[in-house]
Length: 304
Image (cartoon, rainbow, N blue to C red):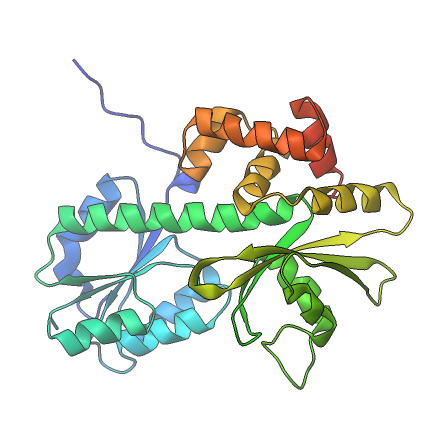
């Protein structure tokens, strides 16, 4: 006889915020979520939801589209406008099924749209997928910074389309207050195909920028690394930058530096251990090392 899995500790349970002006009507949904391993928080309106988010950041939000006061659509816009909350997947639950309402739900930042009456198991399946994807995406993006590097995507008009957390800090120090959101003028030379430049910073260090080529939607991918002039850390940083690792190789190296096995890395990045091993072969070749320890040492040196 197969036994039920042991419940996870409260601290490890994913958190979902349910926002609805009639939460009592969602009792079955909340019970299903709790039974499936989620911690459920409830808010009766948009303002209450925003107050909740000041205290705890959930893994996902189930949001009613029509509520008195602040509508679900406006609540979602405010959530997505806050950098600390923008990564949270928002799934709309509403009786509004017209095309215009569905489009508005996606335009304001929602990732899915569930029409009432709610079918708990369907919502659970959608929620699990979106929460997992958001978690993996966040870990993958943050992992780029573990090796002391950052990634920036620049569109065809010179605007910063996306930046990793570490790159955001470095960009802020160089940003032109007259032209926020644009790649700083001191870095424009890096937009040339194959370019690799380095610029001085106010801290006496040098920011190296390497053009990794075209990405999706015609955007250019730039790899950032901070170099310490004459210091071992700077040498390691320069060596990593010169290796021109792809974003996926950088992710793999980052998790390797944190002591993860090939199986662990595969689960985090949604790929097989064999594929991870193939990435490591390329990484070793580019870095000029032969062992996992040597590669990890290069990456770990950037954490100081």
